[in-house]
Length: 312
Image: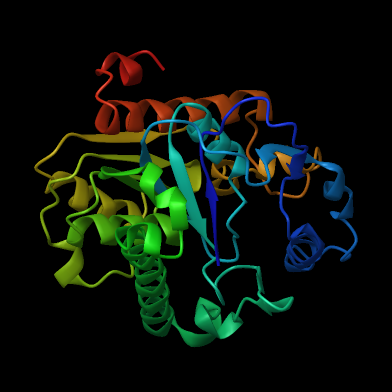
């Protein structure tokens, strides 16, 4: 399953959609994963997005960005970032990585939860088995991203229908969070259709040497939280960045928590007490991420000039 956001014609008269059209399965699954009562996040049903349901697409063609969520994430867990990109002239496509997503609603109202065995507890199975499972997970996520690109290549006869005519397939970016960030990097190491890659705490440590030793020719930006700097994963990521033949931005966000790179700071005011976010207020961390995210893709997909990054 995948969702597409795109620049639309104004004044369509449509009402905004909720932040997730699957909130009734996603919210309880999120709460239970956090060890909270299943009803704890049910209030999120009242949170509206800035997204309308299938309005007419705006005139012109637009660069495409594919977003890949992390382990137990879901396609709208960074909807604030997605809407920021779309509001500035991008088409964004986000798949649910089935069995890795916290919950995926399929046609016929079939709901598939995540498979714990897809990424077992390292303390139970050991480091080697854990990293092997992580490799398979990232490879599966990467295959989902490539499937999205393949569907776009089918044009108006493919799954995206007439919307494909509005996609500029000469300008494609990929970004992701955690395992999704690792998948984004794998795709852009191997896939010529990728023009720029951005990772938010990208998990690359499980990737085999034959992948990480490749020399990337795509510009990249890697943002890392406190807990994801200075560890073995960071060393592997630094090696990928160091072998790049293109401009690469290496950015640490002091005070950021891993979950600050998705919409967690906006979900509950108790995020700090629950250990779900860092000390940076939501009103500060969200603009930091949005500005770098937009600035990076503006430079490398829209050619707006380096000032877009230098001034954020």
